Structure formats: structure tokens, C-alpha cells
Image (cartoon, rainbow, N blue to C red; front, side, top):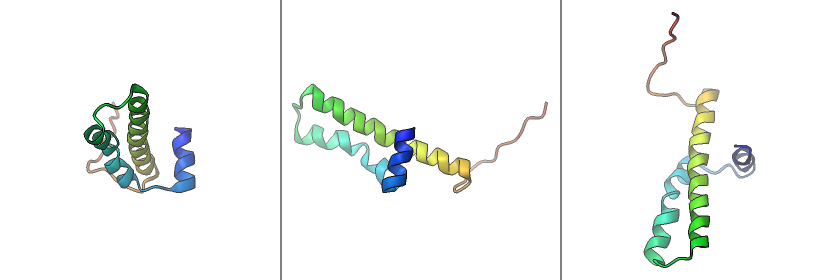
Length: 79
């Protein structure tokens, strides 16, 4: 998660753009180049995973800081 924070501070990419582009990292090469080597697939999978982690980690940080709110309210159980 430290890497994501560093990238976020330095470049500040839009989390929705990163989340939207993530699946296309795997879909477009599949359509254009059906016989990719395993090493390329591994690299694409790592980039895809990173974009997903970035999106959800950024969302979690925004929820924790109160910049965005969820659609439901948490109720404290005091028993």
C-alpha cells in the first residue's frame, strides 16, 4: 500500500479512470494478440491487479478521511 500512496502523491491519477481502464488492460491485448507469451500475460495481470488495488485503496482512504460517504449508516452495538 505504500507504493500506491507514493504514486498517488506524485501523479494523482483519477481513481475512476484507473478503475475503468483496469479491465481493458486484459481485454484489448486478448482481442488484438491472441497468442501472447506467458511473461507478457504475467505483466498484464500484475498491472491489472495494481489498478484494482489502487482503486479500492483510494476509495478506502477517502472513506476513512470523510471525503466521501457510504450509502448506509453504521450502528454501534453497545451490548
